[in-house]
Length: 103
Length: 487
Ligand SMILES: Cc1cc2nc3c(=O)[nH]c(=O)nc-3n(C[C@H](O)[C@H](O)[C@H](O)COP(=O)(O)OP(=O)(O)OC[C@H]3O[C@@H](n4cnc5c(N)ncnc54)[C@H](O)[C@@H]3O)c2cc1C
Ligand code: FES
Picture 1 (cartoon, each protein chain N blue to C red):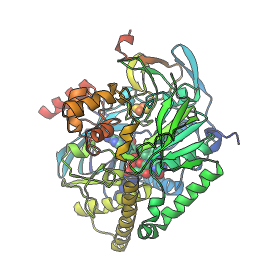
Picture 2 (picture 1 turned 60 degrees about the horizontal axis):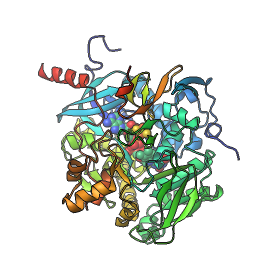
Picture 3 (picture 1 turned 120 degrees about the horizontal axis):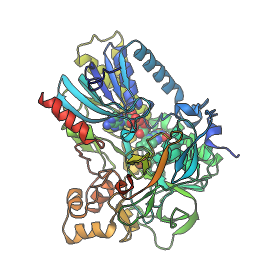
Picture 4 (picture 1 turned 180 degrees about the vertical axis):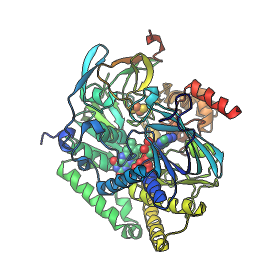
């Protein structure tokens, strides 16, 4: 019974691609959100809170909680559960408001 | 394609704009187009379906998406109809468009939408759009209600519906060993799907019980479909060896950087933990939710009246034809009260007929009989929905789960201690005052996650989330909108 979600719906996605997350390569399947790809790679957190620096990741999964914010290609406050992963994209853990990370 | 210097789609004028492409919005737009109305369908998501029929992303090429769904045939029929209406030019579809404001009045509405996720563009998104219409249907659905407990901000603690949404759209799981907890029938669906997709679900923890349903044999008798559905879900849980524990709650999640275990305790009728009953259950994720709250920003901004449902949540008041209290504005689906996909489909169809009549379209022969039958089914399902809401209404004892340092507001990191001080020492008697004193609810999510808890700690019901904008809007878009208004 070693089912996984892809087998369950008989998904035949195109080839996986990579984006970088905090400098490490993360694989993603075509169509997956950044959050979905991070979950698939076993990562559950990609934000640190403004006041106490606690780790956070996706919570509501539908774009209403804003807990899943990342810095994506230099833009802070991007909801990882809504934004599509793209080949070669650069995603970083968002520290606080994320603005200190804009180069 | 829009011409370069013009805001996209400003020229689009239709009879009806439908906001939300869940079951309610799809049924409405297809029926309205059948009845000869020109329509626009706006939805924040890239693909139609809403929460219930959330589809796997196209790129994942799922050959059997129905394995994660019930009633997929109904949905497939709706998407085929939508496609035909689109091809014939009767429906303009704006996928990936979040409506941040609706303005105007009866007969002349303007819906202002933003394209793409947080300005990152994406399929169907990336462009702002304004659509003018003679009538508006609000079919914006719901989001989850959360009640905090120590450790609920740990990574790996996710919304129950959220886990379901991520699974259906991205074909991923938050962990391999997932406890499902909270209250309400959605948990049965979530535990079943997670288990089917390969997660081990050691236990489903429900704060209420299912026995209460049996005390309303009349309501159950009038909804045999719901009994069959419940039995099928129970069988699925049995098959996957998911233990179901009622009158129990997860009162704490443990771990440092991610959840490693939860404490499950028995609760009394008021959801107060029974001392000495706490047991640790190991897991690498917790999917938790305490029911759903209608998403009402746009309708409230336009002044629609609301009522409190039996579980304390606010929903739009609609009449027998799904008309809200604001003329020219209709609502269908979960925004009028939580009731499931079947009810949402019925309400969408009824609303479309009412709108067509209001816009003086001829009534098709034989429509009366169908409308009467739909009306009766709606009453029966509404009756069941009320029973459901009443059975799973959060008990006041949930507040005993909190410790002073439990965060209530995830965005602003406001603790239970701070909220308690605002209520008990500074005399705050409602959510708004607590917000002003503590900043709970002032962050990114604008109180969508903490509002329920804060309002309840202040002695009230779920608040009707009044927010001037329904999503973050770049200043440039607001400025451009102002400039157009002044012309
Ligand atoms: C996260 C989640 C998961 C759920 N999963 C299940 C499940 O697995 N099984 C089940 O039986 N029930 C589930 N439900 C319950 C579900 O809400 C209903 O059964 C059903 O989907 C309601 O249909 P609807 O058309 O009223 O709303 P929805 O299906 O919620 O559709 C509303 C649509 O409106 C769109 N929308 C909202 N606001 C705006 C806006 N301002 N601008 C543009 N678009 C907007 C949304 O993107 C969404 O597509 C879930 C609910 C939630 C919140
Ligand atoms: S997970 Fe809630 S907004 Fe992304």
